Image 1: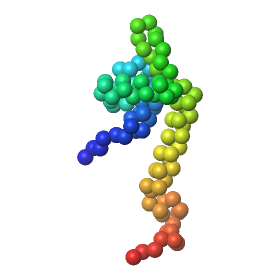
Image 2: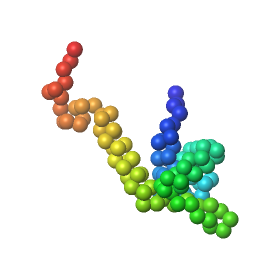
Image 3: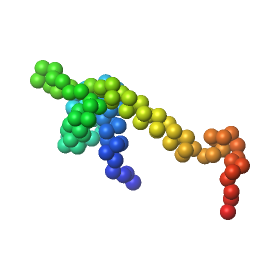
Length: 104
């Protein structure tokens, strides 16, 4: 069963796509696995908030990460790593049983 992504997850997927080299809206849409309308709404918000820069290349719009976008993406990846550790069994994090764990 799939779940609907949060706005934060959507924004992170877009920032990841742009960071990975996708600059044109269609490429970002496919890389972030979004449909056209939500992509355009999210791109507008990310540009307005300063996470992405929008420019024209001929008749095409292209997007690039700003310093603020790079910083935010780095923080999101760090949080993902920290929560990945939380999701691991206690034994694999500490190397053994947790002495503070009380079984009921």
